[in-house]
Amino acid sequence: MALHIEKDETVSGATIRVSGEVDLYSSPELRSAINAAMGRSGSVVAVDLSDVAYMDSSGIATLVEGLRNQQAKESRLVLLKPSNSVMKVLQLSRLDAVFDIRDEL
Image (cartoon, rainbow, N blue to C red; front, side):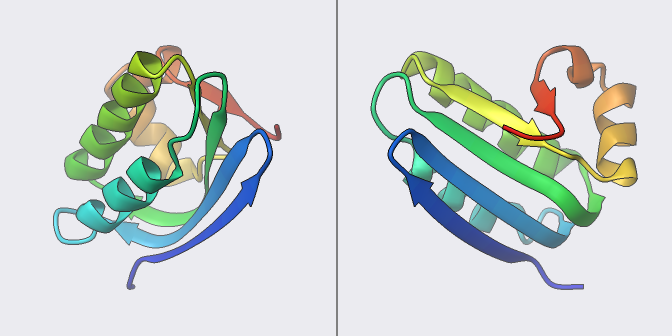
């Protein structure tokens, strides 16, 4: 299953909707989308992961990199509705306690 990314920008930030599989080959596309969405200080980048069927460690590394970059810009990265498979990876890596995970903004 290929990766599909949609981005909606708002005054306060952006929402990135991700569907498909995030792996070694597709994670650079997600990284680019997150980096492109980073705005001014105080903005929020929400990554909707509800339709992600699979995410490997490179996808998790991409999210961690996005989180670090957002913190450096004094803005926030929020993960919206991670699918069960993504949530399991976040829990196994204990990153569910690090990320701001929400059902809605």
